[in-house]
Image 1 (cartoon, one colour):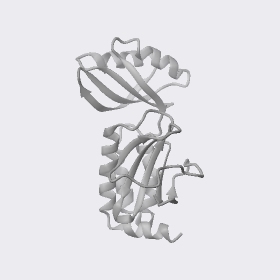
Image 2 (image 1 turned 90 degrees about the vertical axis):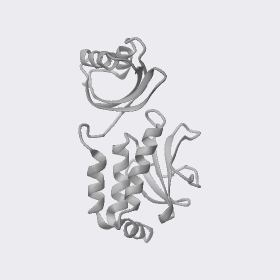
Image 3 (image 1 turned 45 degrees about the vertical axis):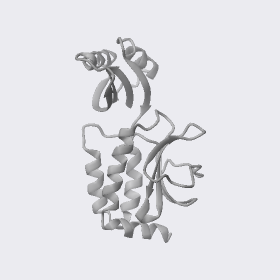
Image 4 (image 1 turned 120 degrees about the vertical axis):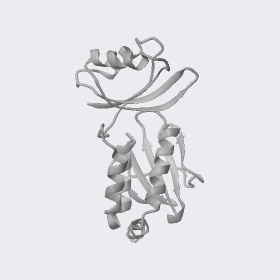
Length: 211
């Protein structure tokens, strides 16, 4: 199984090597790492880890937290293809998707961000949602002025982003796992900026709104 592990560790030489050794001893393999934060003597990393089904998440956390100074903030499943440049691949598909540019973006974002679902809305109307989205979306009706991470009252973590040229908003959500980090918000912001600059974007949205 493929897991995303958010771990805080001491920011000193050898700390990551200790984490790697512990994971290896448990039978797990790091396939990708993203540094989210560094400062005040610690680092916050997202590790994409392949684990055999025989390893429980509890045992994985226990093993990692056996390393001095290491704390596991969250472990959740991911569908991300590790070892690739997924943003570049998705943007390549979007540039050739024509009227399907919007749906391609929305379907791709949950995989890119280890999230559960994504959707675009126009006011209280859902324009398009990925396949794991709930039938009824209970998200803030008004989008913020810029992409922002928040946790709703029921514990759902979202990034809520305006798409001003299109009079739409985008919601990216996950229930399993931690709140979205500011680095993830920045990453999504850059993807949306590129998407909104594509000539096919307005045609794609117009097609969806006519449905």
